[in-house]
Image 1: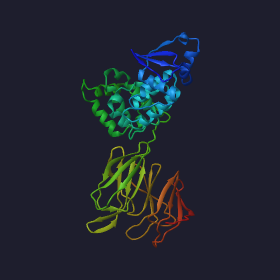
Image 2: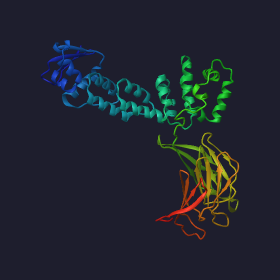
Image 3: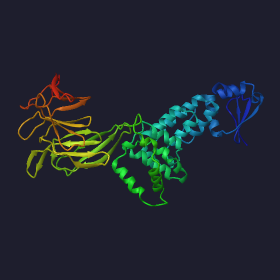
Image 4: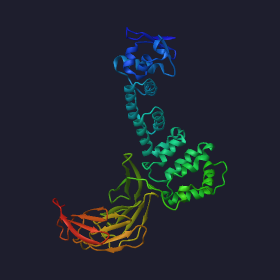
Length: 438
């Protein structure tokens, strides 16, 4: 049996950990650990023994704790951190435990978040547990790709993730896919699938995904776990899917930003989507339209609208009334109903389920015309014109109001007014003048 000689000449006790013996001083250990303070100072049998056996501890981790008790320092690295954390938790070295938790939080990534979440829950480390859960919640798609971590996740942990309003997915379809992947790993999990599928918010599943599920459910493949699970679902829909009234918090919040553009003389203009929660970019289907510029872009629901613009056909440039629609759920572009008025350098903004286009230029003049398109409608509606016709203005919506800021007027001069439209009353007014018109 190996013996470890400590630096403390006042060693008065031998502690046996694994196959190693450690000569220690009771007072030094008691000053650093509540566990040893109770062990040596209480009425337990060990308080009077000179040789004490400690079971279930890693000897190397214990050696590091002894060094911390003697000198107040400990070296934490990837190889020793988990064993050191478990030993510090068991022996109540609270400062060392905090150092280990801080180290693991810095090391968190998609590939280890499930294991660290389980470790944090077992050792009562709420800060580490929250951080690990946050990684899984904001990176579900990448987490699913880490099969060793994802497929070993306990059902309770998976349910907690999928039920969260803070779960970040680009489509609710991913929640359904996560359940299918986890349940298909072993036939014993098929009995738990309905409970987990109930956490997918059915009204938010895309039509194309539902159509795919219907087609897959009709395949008569007995050995295919997906087909078996879909047949179970076909005969036993989750109660939450059939309730007449939607449950509270039925919508998850998907915050995202799109950037569209490029050189107009190229065959396509690139579209990228930015996810603030994960700080990542994703390439989307590009806008395949050559020689189009000076258009306006706005978002309504899951759709991006490109309206109007200036187009060159062979030699001649002219205004267009085109509407091109990007469907976020399908990652595809389609043509929408043409505007009533061709225009370029105009404003576009979404308010509720309506798309508004405002002002801009035609081939002959700057205009004040306003029209709107209800989402999924086939015809545009005329609205009251702006007080002042402008092009190249800035626009934003706040509640039921649209604000058009500055722009160029009919003479090409900078207009300093801030025009406001109350969309409920369809009334315009000029509410202010910009101190820095542009």
